[in-house]
Length: 564
Image (cartoon, rainbow, N blue to C red; front, side, top):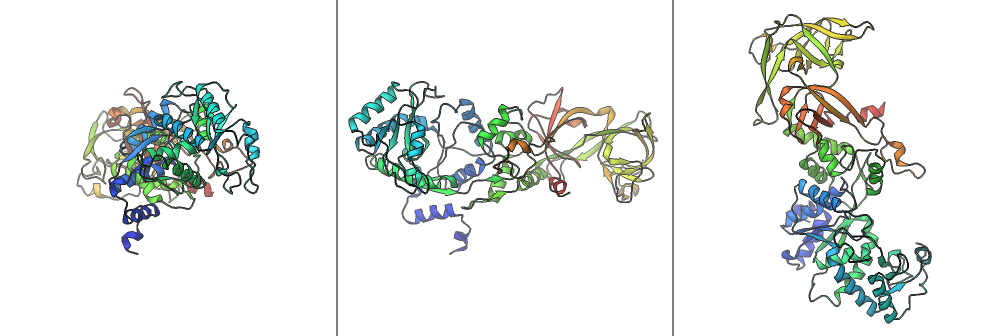
C-alpha cells in the first residue's frame, strides 16, 4: 500500500476504490441531512466536516438537506439557524433541499409497494405493534392485518392520506420479515397519521413518512453517491438497502445511481451533553439563556462565546474519521481555540478584580500615551496607543502585603514592571476601618520606560503586571463562563439525572475596567486580555455598555482544579 493511500481515512479509501472500479468522478455527490428540530451542536461538526470536506477534496457537490418529516418538533427557526451555522463554518452547499420536497414521490412509491404486496396498513395500537415485534433474542409475530388484500390496503392508505383516520388508528408498514435477527427489518413503519401543520407544506399532508423510509429514498432521488452517517445507523443499513433496492426496480431509468451508506463514529465530548432533547430541556427550564448561550455546545453558542470557524475545523481534522466510538477530551477543543486566537487576537488590557494603584512620585496631572504591540504573533497587526497616568487599576490578586519568594507580583519593598510602561516598587497601603486594603502606593523609576532604550529600561525584574489608567478606563461587563457540567460524562448514569451535575459556577458576571481602545469594539470581535485569557464581544454589547464573554483561559486550569 502506498504512503498516500495509508494517509487516507477509511471513507476516502472507499471512494478511491469506487473510482478505481469505474465510478465516474462526476457521479460523486454528498449531503449533510440534519433534522430541523433544534440547533446544531459540536457533535454535528464532525458529520458536517466529513461530508463538506469530501466535497472540497473531490470538487463534488454537497447538498444541505433537511429531513423534515416530523412537524410536531420541526420549525423554520431551526432551518435558518442550521443554514447560518454551516455557512459560518465556511462550507458551501450546492442545493438547499428538504425531504418534504419528495412527499408526493414517496407517497407514489409507497402505493407501488402496496400494489406489489410489500407494504400493508396495520390497525394495531403502537403498544401492540411493539409487543409483537419481539426482542433481540426472540423473533416477532405477524400482525393480524399483515395479509390484508391489496385493495383494502390501498383504500385504507388513501383514507389515511385524506384525513379520514384518527392519529394512531392506522400505520403503513413494510412487509419484510418478522423473523429477521435485525429488529429494524421486522415490518418497519413507513407512515403515520399526524394532524400537525408542517413548516413548509402547511396542512397539505396529514400522513408523514418515517425516517428510514424517507432518508434513503431522499438520497436516491438526489443521486447521492455516498450516504455517510454515524455508527448508530449501522443496523439501519440493511433496511436502507431494502427500501432502495425495491424502489430502484421501477425507477432506475430516472435514477440510475445507487447510493451507498457507510458509517463513522460520532463525536463525543467530555463534560458535554450531545442530545438535542436534553439540550432542549436546558433551554426550556431556563438553565441557560437560550440555544446560543455561550455555555451550550451548540455551534451558535460556541460562536457567541468567541470560538472561530478555523478552530472548530482544526479540531475536527485532529479528531479524524474512525469506526470506533470514543470520547474526546474537551481540553482538545479548548487548545484549538487558544492556538487559533494566539495567532489572530489582538492583545489588550483589562482588569477584572480592580484595586487602585497610586504612583506617588509620578507628576500630578501628567498623562502619557504609550505605544503597545497588538499581537507579537502577527507582524501585520500593528500597534495601538494606550494612555498612562499616575493612578491605575491592577488586579487585586497581583498584590500581597507580605509574600514569599515564589510570589513574583507586586509586594511591599519589591519591584515589578507595568506592561509597556515603567518599573514600580511597592511602598505602602491604605486600609479601611475593617483592615481591607483600598489603595496601594508605589513609586516608579522614570528612566525605566519600556522601549526607551535606556539602561534602566532594559533592567530585568521577575514580574510584569497589566493595568488600566483609572482616568481613561472604560467600564465593561465581563461574563466569565466555565464548563456547564462538573462531571466528565453527565448523562452516563442510569440512576442519576444529568441535571444533578450542573456546574453552579458556570457563569460569573463581573464589572471590569478595560483600556479605551476597546470602546469601539464590535460584536464578535475577539481579544486576548493579557495574562487573563481570550474574550469576545457579546451580542448584548453596545457602545454605552460593553459586554465581553470569556472564551477560554490562557491555560487549562480545569485539570489542575479537579486533581486537588
